[in-house]
Image 1 (cartoon, one colour):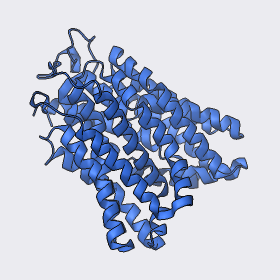
Image 2 (image 1 turned 30 degrees about the vertical axis):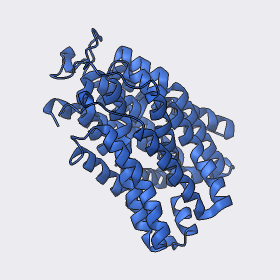
Image 3 (image 1 turned 90 degrees about the vertical axis):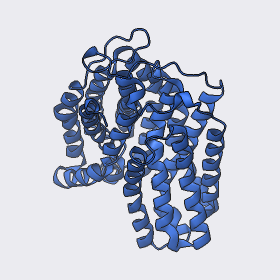
Image 4 (image 1 turned 180 degrees about the vertical axis):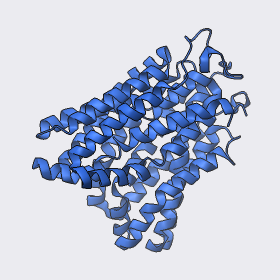
Length: 398
């Protein structure tokens, strides 16, 4: 990775870890004590979280346009304030309606403050050379659950769930906000140039003249992201139960689930290393094979192969996280990346919000056979990617 990219990667990697840990990974630890204190069932808390994901989907395209116009620094710094208000208000809720309102605020911050916004900020700064930086922040952000879950659990044990929310809100003000304000400023876009730190173009950061892509390409990408987003969130919500329905013991299911995080990090390291010089389209095709290969292994070898299934799924998911940012950049260029990314990932945000509920219904009806559905979705995404073509002129500039 170029030296000029390391500072922004460390800054964004740190703030992304904070953003994910204090939003997306919050309900897993705090939903039960929150529900108990409010006199509601935990499902109501998760319903509020799903509402937040829908709010994030709704504001995503608007936030992308703001980053295209003003750069990532002011938008991402603004999300720290939004996170602080939303999470801080969560500490004050007294019932289901105020709970829903607080999660709506948090959802708006998520729509402007998680990976897609960070990818847009890097594309605005560095143009096509942002690929390494995008991979770098997903690698650091991959530890959000590793940091967030134990920290949330410790704070809840010390101060209760309301105190934990106050602490997370404070961290956005004292850590996240200053770090995002240290990001390089983006010069006003002119002539298609991607601005770099200090307003001077980084060598190679200027917008390249890209060959035209098929008019179907955005639809194929949007479908791919939506299908893989559904699978990712369905597995995140139901993996232990699914593996038990497939015949695994609880201990084996938990062990397999614990392998997904390290496998995702390994996938991102693989993308940054051996696969670095490949076009992201190739990486995307390889990544979509991870889940179906895992399903076939599990079905062929039985529950003893649960760790193999989890590892293959995690490897593919880790690469997919990077591809979601790099593939649109290399196909369409950096100009207008933020708004385009908002629209391309809009269906994926909706499928992510609905996946836990719909996958739960599928498990109730079909049990472990639900894996055939997720495998079919992954293979349909692979078919969409095979319909895309990447001329040599679009190859990664390394």
